[in-house]
Each structure stands twice: as structure tokens, then as C-alpha cells.
Figure 1 (cartoon, rainbow, N blue to C red):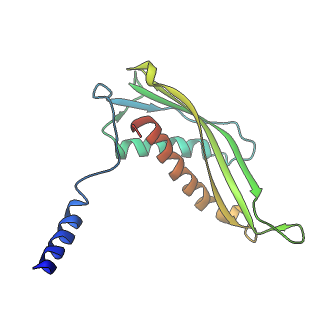
Figure 2 (figure 1 turned 60 degrees about the horizontal axis):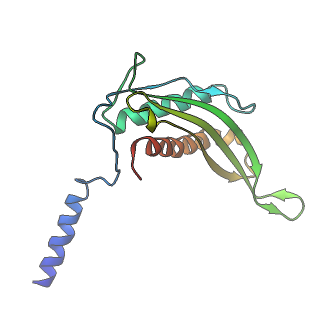
Figure 3 (figure 1 turned 30 degrees about the horizontal axis):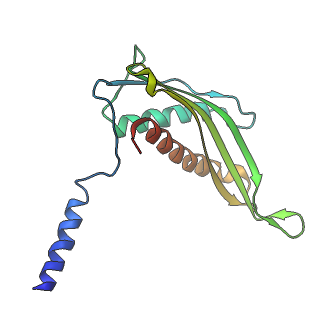
Length: 165
């Protein structure tokens, strides 16, 4: 009997795990539309297409994880972004003046404008990094690094704008 109870609880928890989200998305019901302005690149080292990629990644994140509809005409909320840092630094020194790990760091300055409730607007910097072996050059890992950094930054921006956490 105890074994049957354990099997039932395990099965039930697996089935119910997809029914509830811990996401905590909290969007005012009066907010229906959003707009993401093309990001500006103020970093000297960033790829030319990075600003467009980050703006598109944010649009996609909001489109797929919220009920909001994209519009460039009188949106309820708006995002603007500036790439302020795109740097590779040495992070793990080794004997002989070499390093074992390099780190790509991207920082963006984001402004969230809430046209429905202006008090909820904010300006914040979001930053994330990707470590890679110093035996590899940036060009060989750049796509993977930018994808990983962008995924985390978009998650952080989304959470700052749409969760109460």
C-alpha cells in the first residue's frame, strides 16, 4: 500500500509540474502592446549587427512569454537600449604572464517606459559574461558567447519589467 502511494504521488507530481509556472509574470491588464526600439551601439568593439540582434531577442522574448502584442504606434510599454560595453578580459592568470580563461562581457543600458503607469518606468544596466579558454580566439566562440549572454540578459530584462520578484 505504501509503495502504491509513493508511485501515485510521483506520477501526480510529474503530471502537475507542467500545469503551474513559477514564472511570476505580472502584467497590468490595461497593458496590451509593447515596442522595442532598435538598440544603439556605443561600444567600440561590438559586432556591427549586435544592436539589432539584442533588440530582436528582446522582442522575441516578450512575444513568446507574454500576451502583449508588438506595435510601433502608441504602445503601452516601450524599451530602448544602448550597448555600453563589449569587452574581453583575462580572468585566470597563470605562471608566465598568460591566462587560462578569457571573459567576454556585454553590458546594456535599458530604459523601460510604461505609458500606462509612468511610475513603473525605470532605467537599469544589465550585464552578463561568457568565459572561454584562452587557447581559443574570440572569433571562434563569439556566436556561442553572444547567444548565451543575450539569453541571460533578456531573461533579466523580462523579469525586471514583468515580475514582482
